[in-house]
Amino acid sequence: MAEVIVEVQANPIDVVTITSRAAQEIRKIKAANSIPEVHALRLGVKGGGCSGMSYVLAFDETPKERDTVYQMEGLTVYVDPKSQFYLSGTVLDFSGGLNGKGFVFNNPNATRTCGCGNSFGV
Image (cartoon, rainbow, N blue to C red; front, side, top):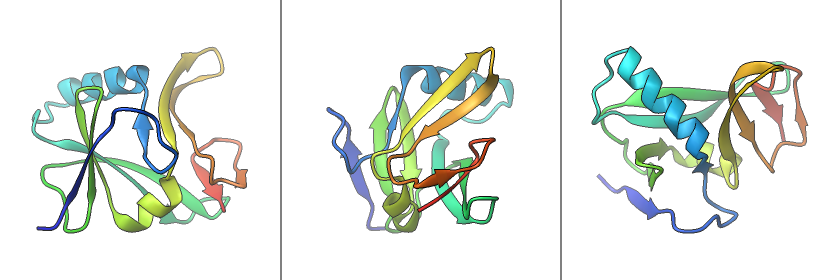
């Protein structure tokens, strides 16, 4: 399996990063759903949504061939090559404020987003 492991030290433009708030919420979700600790977060995109592309969050036990594997905030994150192209520079955050609770994708590649923030266009 040819995987690329990226140890995130800084915040270069071509990597995907996760804030400590998002990492904390991911750990809570894993614990509440009895997801094994060895499962990593999979970040991705798929066609669809009101703006053209939708964000995908899932858990995977092992990386797929050609995945980029990030280690950050005590989590392992898998991103497939197609998604990496669209997610480069994205910061995954978590908001628990008055405007709603959920994950927030701060994606510098998005030229338009929908009102719910779950889809984007490039």
